[in-house]
Image (cartoon, rainbow, N blue to C red; front, top):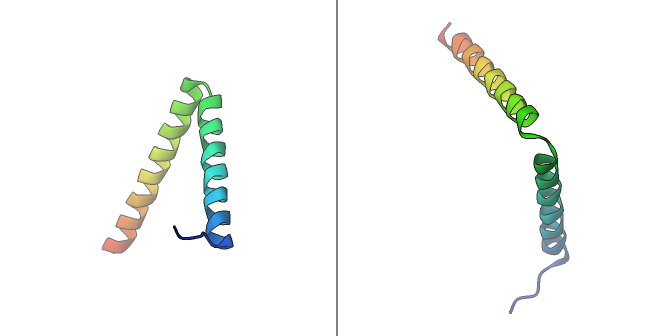
Length: 58
């Protein structure tokens, strides 16, 4: 069995902590505001992609 280096151990620990924080944030919101936020971000991303596509075609 290989021994983990300190940096690998810290990376794994930070990944677990980050995942836990994201799960807590996602589950602490009520479904309607979360849905609205996701929809807003998707619309914003689509608008940005359209802007990039328009600037490329010029």
